Amino acid sequence: MLSQWYHQYGEPGVQQAVKRYARAYQRARVSVQWRPGDYDQQIATALLTDVGPDVFESVGGTLDQIRAGQIVDLTDAIGSAAADFNQTVLATMTYRGKIYGIPQAIDMQLLYYRKSMLAAAGIHPPASLDELVAAARALTTPDVKGLFVGNDGGAGALGPTPLYAAGLELLTADGAVGFDDPSAAVTLGKLRTLYADQSLLLGAPLDWSNPAAFTQGLTAMQWSGLWALPHISKALGDDFGVLPFPPDGARGRPAAPIGAYCCMVSSRGRQIQAAKAYAKWLWVDRTDYQQDFALSYGLHLPARISLTLQENRLRTGMAAEAVRFATEHGWALPLRWTDRSRVALQDAMTRIIQDGADPAAELAGAVLTARAELDRVRG
View (spheres, rainbow, N blue to C red):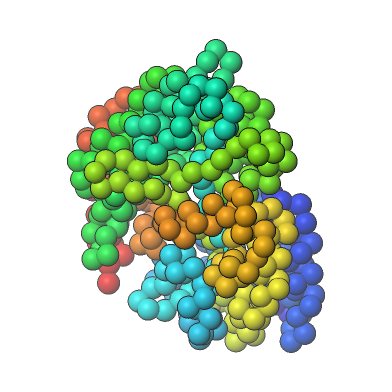
């Protein structure tokens, strides 16, 4: 018997689907466990014991687990199919040339805008961060806010995306901190302007991951996920468009965050080879299940490039635009970007946005934390 863990997905039908996949496997019995609550903490604890899962999915905290030998190398399981996976996402599970997780389906975030509201105000879809700030201000009325990027003002939902839009990176190719640059402070200062202008929707009943504020007309623009697109389309028809986060500054570029839960195998399992074989069967061999998982229970992108290209539902309309954004402008959190670094940057952004703290000083502190973490995990 193999034990397989999933976090609790919000889309109806996912739990039934993954259990159906497991029942179809002929070489071993697979028990699927749905794990509500703090899944990342549950996994971190379970990997230290002999009673955790054989196969599990994970998206965060992976580097320390890889370095501790808690996760099995799956390079041979993914084999030549590695070239068919989204390389930006696959890189987040690659350490010292070895692959430790098989991407299951790709999620991405993007900016939704209400065409009719922008047209009524004589505003074009924003092509730069400055235009986004101006548009949010112009679209704000006593009844409607110009932009919704989360109830905290954007630090949580946007994360490092504005830094990538400024032409920066979290970590450079040679392993240095990539946002130790004056332009980072300039860009994050513009997020403070959005907050200070009172252009942002705050205190929405449902946060940024749910499109309700947008579909109910509480905001003219909203940062959310690709998963929200079917709900928005059903509610608004053609009265919406999508954009990546707009570029900022001379080196700016559009930015579209992407990421994926990946299938992994625990080194503490008692049937490691059987677990690897099952992971390969489900997330490499069974492309029909991979397509079903990505597209039948909400809208996600298949992790395999070939599956994305052949899917009719991703060839037209706003879904096709999202695919283009993910392909041309997609970025993903580097494997060496640790939880301590993430928290340090998010806390700095919160103080900048909400409190008006000095962006340069706040970023300097986040840079120091990120450098210390890089030194800790270097090698």
